[in-house]
Structures are given as structure tokens and as C-alpha cells.
Figure 1 (cartoon, protein in one colour):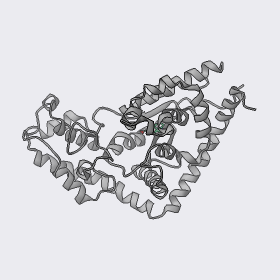
Figure 2 (cartoon, rainbow, N blue to C red):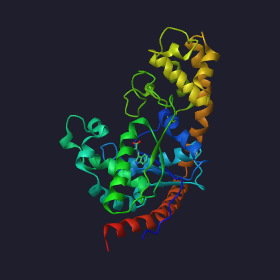
Figure 3 (spheres, rainbow, N blue to C red):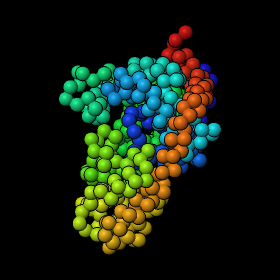
Figure 4 (spheres, protein in one colour):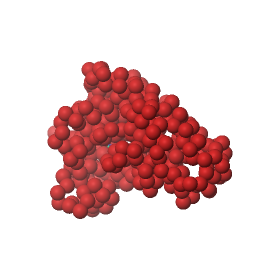
Length: 341
Ligand code: TRP
């Protein structure tokens, strides 16, 4: 009855093309993608259809197109292997929208009403939010299930959306008497310490929407900017502690140690052991040096790629063609199951 093959392991993840990418995107996502791509086949999508659910992407066509290329360039510069894996823009594979429509009829209003990210993003004036923002998690479920992906690397903030994707898969399988048709995709949550906080306020996530550029390290920052932002990062007057426990209640100090550990690929305890009792001024110099060494090659590779947009467009076209070919038999099965002639 259903003809599409089922992969044992398949990774799907995506990032929105809005504004500039920063250290949080690198340590929280890209770095983990590069790791997981050697373990399982992967699809890495630039989710431009999600980007138009809000003002940042909607109504700014030139910026959206540029941001889509920039995010693709960041994937590649960070080390995603575009031969073995797929990098593509969501809007270039129309099957995402087709499956999302069917899933709009699977998902229940009650499920979406519980989504905390919609509440946060729509703010006080829910009635002015786009309908697309409301059904955003349904499109995300379609992204994943269109390929029957089994593993989804995401940040903590996307866990609820992934649970909704599992609910959609289960209800579809059930309602159309197709047990096991869609797998229940599992979140792959990046390890602790990869949640990168603002350099100005350890209680807030590093974010592209923060007014202060000093709150974040952008992937395109040059060595001077990186060093200066780290030097000016907020800390407390105490030196580095002797143990991880000593970071408790010191959000800014903890954040800098976490960033160091993630960039160096070392356990936090090892970093603390090395710098125990040292002043933050010295630690910051070491961190700046490490950050410059790890990030500036990515920035220069991004610049090289963006200097030749035609090459990025070729990669995206190739990715879209391969993604479309993977999706087609699955969407055909879905349509047959639903009863579309
Ligand atoms: N909502 C995700 C985010 O903002 C992006 C996204 C869209 C995604 N579709 C996805 C992530 C599918 C993983 C899988 O981070």
C-alpha cells in the first residue's frame, strides 16, 4: 500500500533565515550538526517559509533572499558536507506546504493553543499575529515527517514543537489506519552548556534581537570585534572557582566558562581545573584567543562563499532537487492514504 522506503536513522534540522547568525547558533546547533552528520544521513534546511510568519522576514524580499544565502553559507562554512548531506531552502520543495496543509487538518486547535512559543512571539496582541505564526509548529511537523526523519537536533525551546510533531504523526497513523507509517521523531537536545547566554546579562539567551551588539558574538565578527566583546563581557568581581559548584548563582561567569568548554570541546570541569583561582581578565584573554581561532575561519569561509552567490544557489538547487526526490514517494503515499485521487 505504501511505497516509500523507511530510513532507520535520518536527521532533519533547520534554521530560520532572519538576521545575523551568532555564537549561540553555532554552539547550540551548527557544531552539533557537523558532529551528527558523520553518524547519520542528514537534511539541513533553511526554513524560509517559517521566516515569513513574522515581520522580520515578511515584507522584506531582498533581505530574506540574502539571509537565506547567508544561513546556507554558514551551514557550509561550519562544516556541513553538502555532497553527503542535503542543504536546501524549504520554499524550493513545495511538498513541505502540501503536507503542512494535510497536517493542518490533523492537528487540533487545542494542541496549538498550548504552544508557549506562539504566546511569546504573538505577545499582547494575539489577534494581530499572522495565521502562519499560529500554525508554525504544523509546518515544522511537515518539514520533519515529509522525509520520515527519525532524529531532530533542536534547542530546548523547540522541544514542545517536536512533541506536537510526534502527536501529528501518531494521529495520522491512527486516523488513516497506517500503523508505523510515520515514525515518531526524537529530539536530539544539545548538551548542557551549549545554551549560550547574552554577554551582557547571564539570565537572557544570546539573541539576534537583542538591542546591544555587545550582547552577542556574530558569526561574521572579525577578530577585533570578538576580542573586544569578550573583554567587555559582564562578570562579577570574584576569580574563577575551584569547582563547578562555585559557578552557582554566577550566571555571567558560568556562561563564559560554558562558552570556553564548548569551543574547546572540553568538559567544564577540565576548564575550571585549569583556570581555578585566576582572575577573569586573564581568562577572558584566553577565551578571546580561542574564540578568534575557532570562529574567524568560519567567518572568512562565509565571506568567500557569499562573494559567489551563484555557487550557493547551485548548492541550494541541487539540495532542493534531491530533497524533492526523497519527499515525492512519501507525499504520494500520504495522498493515497488520505484519499486524494
Ligand atoms: N522552529 C525551528 C527554530 O526556530 C526551526 C525549524 C523549522 C526546525 N522546521 C524545523 C527545526 C524542523 C528542526 C526541524 O529553531
